[in-house]
Length: 330
Image (cartoon, rainbow, N blue to C red; front, top):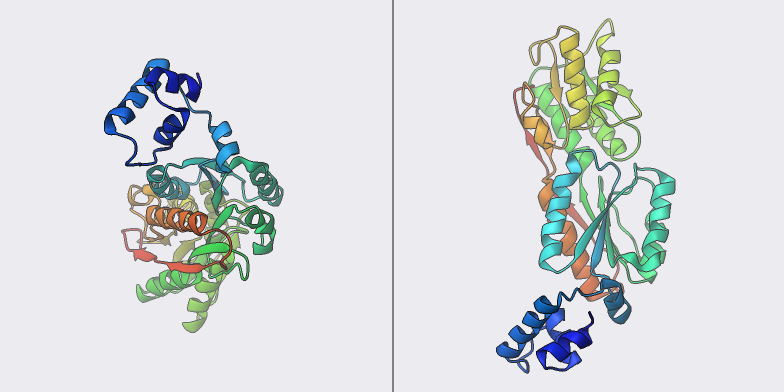
């Protein structure tokens, strides 16, 4: 079925059908005509060809959301916020998982240049701002979600960031204020680690403490478990662990229980991200909320503004809020 078939069934012009299907309002189309076209669409089972529409309008009405690990519970909430805004604007959302690998992030750039999406919201571990220039040259909007202040400079790349260093520093000061003195950090490699480690180290240094950091290759429960076991095997083991994310914190809690330690009596544990499981583990986990849903809605709104305005103006950089959530694990 084509729009021509719908027009013939409804007794109107193909231009009228096109206007009705695009959702555009026009005082020149009576309500009765609008309803007649919609009825013809249903009776004929007409389904618009999105690729044909894209050729006409140079728009796919599709956004890509790029994440390093779709299995990490931090990202689904962010994706839901993004999709809520995209749905209202008539955009579909495709989720792309990169594992934070440089080759997959580079391959994604080429994928976008093939004309599959109008814009991108993403968490990128390896790409620099200048590497998005082919996308902005093609008028594909780009919004990066970052762990520290960044700017695309003269490029029209927009940035939203949560100050991870400030958040990690606040967690560390909070643990110090609770009386813990040997505060260790379970970290990962890459991604937001630099900021979180810097915040932890700076807060300890200000209090005269000595950093104790064990890094694992994975930002997972297993990674946190392995790193925490190394820490708990020390002769002078820590009395608190700050984990780079909640998954690693939950892994550290498992290691502590296996070692016969009570939480927080023998060992306090704090995380980062406030994933859904953080409030349901026992004891509930002290952590940092980045308001993932709101971060997703803000990213989508920023991208849609960019698509409306075009890629002529320089990129923007916007700070997003965080909050320390105190629970029973500390």
